Image (cartoon, rainbow, N blue to C red; front, side, top):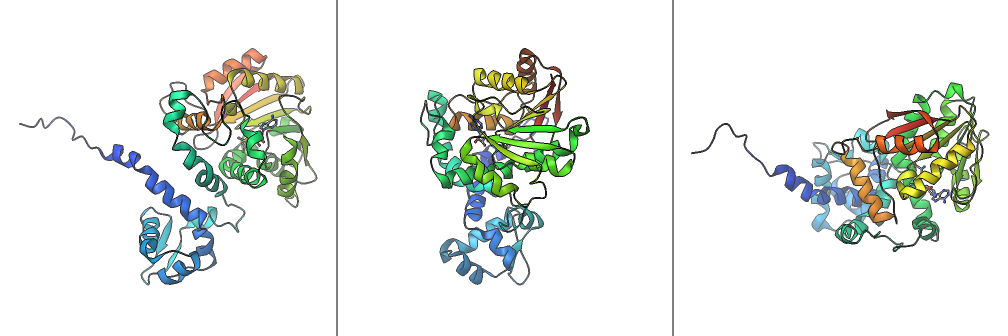
Length: 341
Ligand SMILES: C[S@@+](CC[C@H](N)C(=O)[O-])C[C@H]1O[C@@H](n2cnc3c(N)ncnc32)[C@H](O)[C@@H]1O
């Protein structure tokens, strides 16, 4: 006899997650082949689109219809494929809102590296182009194409949080800021665009300078945002009222995290603020799956990096001397931790 009071168990979620890479890789290949950029130029039928994208007939129809079923492409009653409002806005390379950089990097780098997750879990060693003991950034930046891809990827993944910080933080109380580890400079740019009274610096390794300057030029804030090259391990940060670390602390081990917070302290005046943001894990370490998976990504990608909870960051900030520490949600999985000197 079956027990009617027991809810029916289903393996659905197990199978969906276990085979989740099918959907993920389908989207990543679509971004790689610029399907959405092509559809933004012209919606098209199967034959035309296959010709334009160079698709072999065997997989073309299944590929495009899988994108329809996954919700990334529309097909109308005459068989014309086109973008959805979201893919048209965020995955057309010719639009300023393009966020596909992170997916391009996921396709080229993270997808193959995550194939070695079990090895990373067994050895504790990173599994990317830098092998244990190397600085991932030095290795990545030795290849100019990878450098550019990585920095663009950062703007895509960080845009939502950058806009939230630009709006949400009480910027009226401050005049200058430094975004440390700025990459292309999207956080610095969004803060400056939303707060015309502010002047800001993007600080990063010197190789990043030309890519930052290209991105900021003609943005409407190029007279208030500039680049300073240096290393936050070897050099002092430029002095400013607010120091920001966006997706920086999680790249480094505990001692380096503490060092970065001390560096911020040294660069700030009394009353100045440090803002740290990442996919901050909930204190119970059971809800923010993206933050926990990001931490595994740091295992695969870095020598000693890991993501952390709001409580962890509060403790490190307090050790560095900060007070009035608060954790504020930004968007999606991202939160910021703010401390006052
Ligand atoms: C994960 S990215 C974050 C980029 C950006 N803040 C964001 O949130 O999108 C890390 C950044 O730290 C920079 N970086 C790495 N090592 C550095 C160092 N020693 N000094 C300054 N910046 C560094 C990298 O070049 C890269 O731009």
